[in-house]
Figure 1 (cartoon, rainbow, N blue to C red):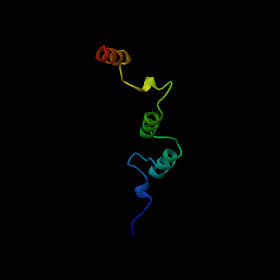
Figure 2: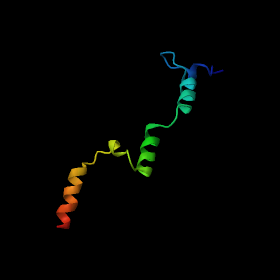
Figure 3: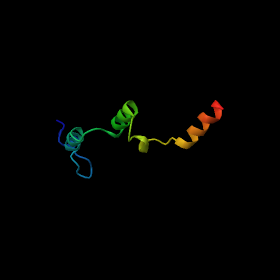
Figure 4: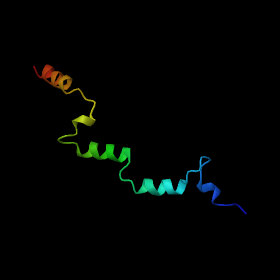
Length: 65
């Protein structure tokens, strides 16, 4: 008979099921946050963007002249 408790711990002794439980209660994941920011955008989100605003302005004004 296989001991199911062995599968719950890493070789370092970490309780895998406890880590999974804590992660589930820990809030949004990194990818969930990125998705929300992309969907909502708006004021204050520019710090999450790698867009060079001045470069975009130059491109827009250069094409409209």
